[in-house]
Length: 264
Image 1 (tube, rainbow, N blue to C red):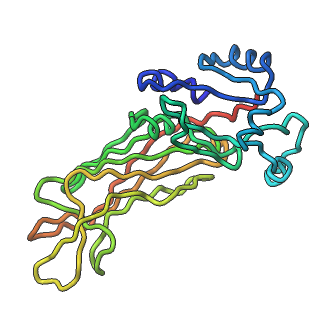
Image 2 (cartoon, helix red, strand yellow; image 1 turned 30 degrees about the horizontal axis):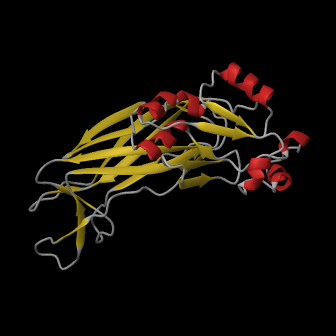
Image 3 (cartoon, rainbow, N blue to C red; image 1 turned 90 degrees about the vertical axis):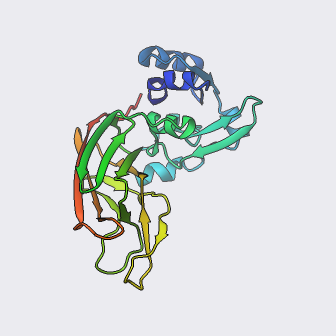
């Protein structure tokens, strides 16, 4: 489903999508008809290719026990969930695999990482002293445990800068945080390296960001919380070569529609 929703993006980028499963041909045909799958599904009944590639998940019982799920016969034979990226010659250029089917890349994030195209599906903007901020997600929806990525662009007015980390006491560095939300987990924000900066009259070392600053923050929502609003807070202090404005905090909201896990 996730890949199908982004199939047009893959086609525009010249990427062909194939999926391999341990299910039989008739099972995959039923699945494709039900969910409108148009890319190629490869049946590996008996998991022969999956075994040959070293992808057979041999920890099914332990993983199901960890999540309190009863193991059924049809659970055995599955591969570790993941992706091979091949070039035109068929050589593997990238591998991306997870330990469990619960955690996986969303289709929008996969397009963003493979194609480098982070089209906003839901976005918000805010403006403060010397700074304009845009925040967006590549998908307007989420499923439990699905990996997402928050993208931000900070446009700092000409002649101004904002402080980076580390910063001397008494100054406020650029920081991005998510407001608490049930089931929300996130990684550290990724920012470009700030440049060294000297402030006349100070012996301390400073680092600053200037111009347009891109930032990303990985996240996932671990439970079926329904529709949610992702609250984003950006703290910063804008300065010129001669003056500093008071520290500021801008808040942005990004709505996300919750989808159920597909269990068919």
